[in-house]
Image 1 (tube, rainbow, N blue to C red):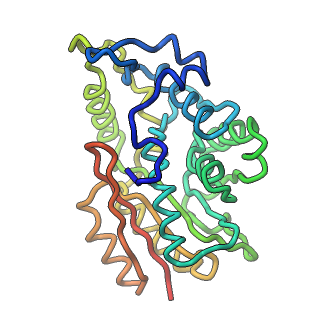
Image 2: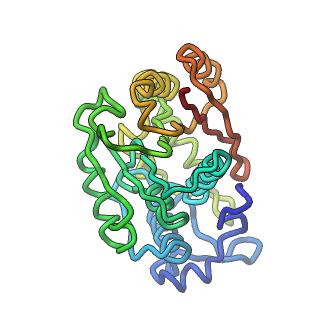
Amino acid sequence: MHPKNNHNSSYNFDALSTSHQKLSKYLFKNSYGNSSIDFSNNDAVLELNRAILKHHYGVKDWGIPKGYLCPPIPGRADYIYYISDLLDENFVKDQIIGLDIGVGANCIYPILGSQIFNWKMVGVDINLDAVSAAQVNINYTAELKKNVEIRYQENNANIFEGVIQPNEYYHFTMCNPPFHSSEKEATKGTLRKLKNLASNSTGTLSSKLNLNFGGQANELWCNGGEALFIKRMIKQSSNFKNHVGWFTSLVSKKKNLPKIYKQLDKLKAIHKTTEMSQGNKQSRFIAWKFQ
C-alpha cells in the first residue's frame, strides 16, 4: 500500500471495537490467537467499515442499503493517497476540488478525500437510490456536509456533461468503473470472491455465500465492461479539458491498458499509469490531461 496509508498494518480490532461497539459481536480468535471477523459475513464487514470510518476518519455514522457495494476501505484510501501524490508532482497548492464519477451509495471516495486531505468533493451517480443513500452518509458528519456535494446524473449516456458546470474547475476527477461486461460475468466474479473469503479458522466453508456483497447492476457491469467505459470517458473528457486538471480512472484489468492507451494517443492526451498493490491484489489507475 501507499506508505502514508493508515491501513498498512493489520486491523486493530480491539481499538476499532472500542470506537464502534457493534463490531464486538462479530469478533473471534483465529487459529493464530488474533482477533478477526468472518470476511464472508456481510454484516460483519459492514460493521467493520463503520468502525474504520469512525476510528480513523471521524465519521459519525455510515451505512449502505441492502445489496449495495460494501467497499474495502484500505484499497479505496490508496487511490486517494496516490491522487494526492499526482497533484503534489504538479505543484497544486490551492484548495483541492475533486469529482467522483459513480459515487455509489457508499460515497467512500468523497468521504476519504474530505477526511484525509480536507478536499472539496462532488460525487455524481446515475442511480437515484445511490444518490439518496450517499447524501444520508454525508449528512451524518458536519465536516462532510461542508466539503461534499452529491449530484444526480440524469442522462446515463453522459459522464461529464450536465455535471460539470461552465464556471467550475476540478483539480482531478476519479472513477471506479464497472469492470464486468455482463450480469453473468459479474455473478461469477462475486461468487469467486466470496468463496475465497469464506474459509474460517476451522477450514470449513461459510454457508453465508450470497450476493449482498455483489453490488447493484450499475456498480458492477456495463456493456463492453471497463475498457469500453473508460474509452467513452476519455472521448467525452476532451470536451472538458479546460475544466479539469487531471482525469483519472481505476483500471482493474491490466490487459485493457493497450486499448485505453490507443484512445488516449488518438486524442493526443498526456497520460501516466500508477501501479498500486494491496496485499496480493494488484491494481492501477490511469491519469490523463490535455495540452
